[in-house]
Amino acid sequence: MKTYKESVERLELILSQLEEGKKSVDELSELVKEASELVKTCKEKLRTTEEDIQKAFQEP
Image (cartoon, rainbow, N blue to C red):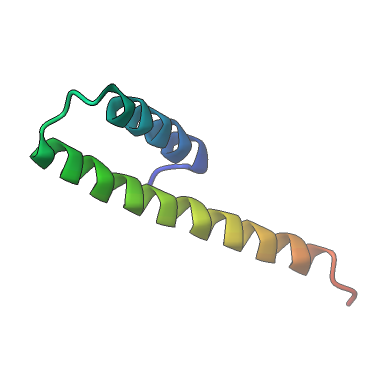
């Protein structure tokens, strides 16, 4: 599994490739699928981090 930073960097690269507009429909489809999975990964990492922070600051 990629780290949050790696996922964001890959998303940035995919975005720049999409903005170029030089990809075929098949390539675009694959990039969008990959981006979707990366977004899910980032959201999950943020959610679990938020939960960890909340747990750390809960009163015993």
